[in-house]
Amino acid sequence: MEIFKRLFDTLNRAGVEYLVCGGIAVNLYGIERATADIDLAVRLDEENLGRFVTAVKELGLKPKMPVRLEELTEPGKREEWRKEKGMVVFSLYDEEAPFFLLDVFIEAPFDFQNIYQRRTEIRLGDIAIPLAPIDALIEMKEKTGRPQDGADVFYLKKIMEEWKDD
Image (tube, rainbow, N blue to C red; front, top):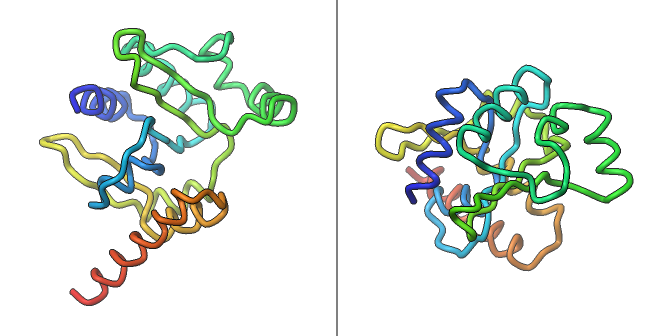
């Protein structure tokens, strides 16, 4: 849990606009399930990505691919990776914590600005964690067709129903 706190605190202090939007987001909404990574959608403009790169360097994270971390800020590179390698996320790891993996979408999985304005913030102590809203998570997960995402959708819809009743 400490590595998550450090990540979110560092991103927040750097002023990075990001949303947690994978299995960890599902966990933070109260659904227990195992996940091996943290999925982030980051606003994909050069300035925000520059802040992101600085923050993850501060944390000592390294790309899993043999590329320079700074290449993530280049739209042409991200497009090349998507087209030529079928890449969806840019993965970063921590040599000190081998089970920690950070996946950053190289193409926004949704209209980032719209979803960011509707984000849900959950606090971990004094650290604010911006989550994609449940409806955006559901829409995102419905597109994958993976069994785990189908289960996530089922439980996320239950949470939405419970919230409506409150």
